[in-house]
Length: 149
Image (tube, rainbow, N blue to C red; front, side):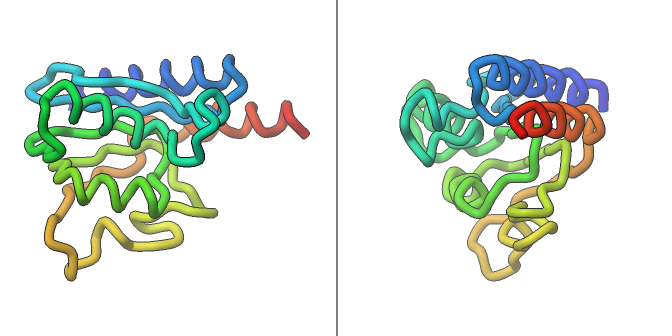
């Protein structure tokens, strides 16, 4: 879908900005009715906060703006398959849909390592679209980590 590509490109821009700041280049954008509610990259180093993944940052910001911890009707665009912490937050926030770029074979919680977002025992189901602009996201991550070795 054209809108999905646009919003994922915004997430990739956030990931690039994170890389320039020395953070792991992961970006996220939260959208409701085609309006961006919040966008950010990883901020774990900047904030000295192990929970400041891009997904958590945008969920917190949107919840503050909407004055509601339930983010019904929202779509989260992320450049990497969410980890278990972020997947749990996505479920708790009641995000309707997740679109992510690259799989994370070392910690992804949709299909790579864990299957949190597709677990039928959970009280909220998230519609997940994986792989959008995956090559671009993977390349950004590979470049970042190869420059640090």
